[in-house]
Length: 199
Image 1 (cartoon, rainbow, N blue to C red):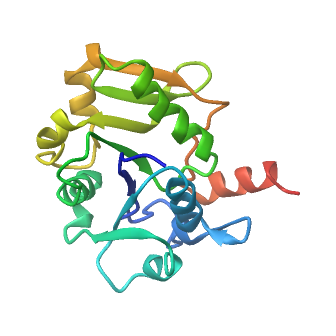
Image 2: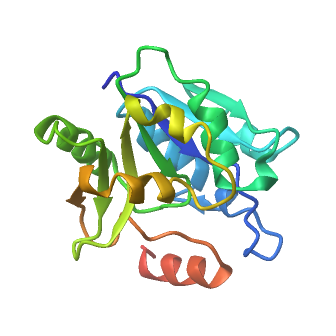
């Protein structure tokens, strides 16, 4: 376990799923959001950004040791979730990890590897997972000196603006396969992923 909080962004609207909530789709018998939260909980304290109630995602997290942050303006996009979560970080947090709840292949080992990279490359401000080929993805760890900037983001492009601004202080760490980028946004994505992972 680490003292670095993990922010799980799970307030999106699954707009490309044709009315299906992707985060409630089962992965090995549990909803994807619960799977992602479980992975995060194994590594550090977890803050989950969710849409306002009522929403079935709350029930999927029942009994889990997570801090839930309802995002009143979730419809704005990802940065509304980032702002809300940043405001709920412990005042003494030295950094925070951010990752998306719809990445089904990310593992505890992947999250731990990015946290370890922060220790082994302390001269950076951002530590980010990539594919084996080096394509940047998630999770991303931000130094506390960037919290103010994160709390002022608007729109739906995540923290890309901050990553670009501090590109000379970003450490990229390769993770296995496409774990860092493989998300399930459409029914086709789910079908392909499920077929590949069928027992």
